[in-house]
Image (cartoon, rainbow, N blue to C red):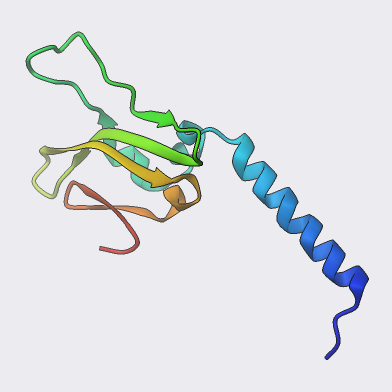
Length: 105
């Protein structure tokens, strides 16, 4: 089956539009769309409980820096400190007994 030049051009424009939409969304809003986000909260150090570390930071290279505490099977929390994840991969992040992982556990 032949693909015409018009079809290729339309496909390319749709790809660019999707990439632009991804670039416009910030890390926090993309993270909040993932159901796993409900099992995690901001990381707070016991030594400085009044200094809350930002949960997600947008990096200039299309990545997000994640610093969270995520619930494990026992109800406790596991710190996930300063992990850099591609913005496009935030939808594929899973909570594996408190440890964040891209892809299934």
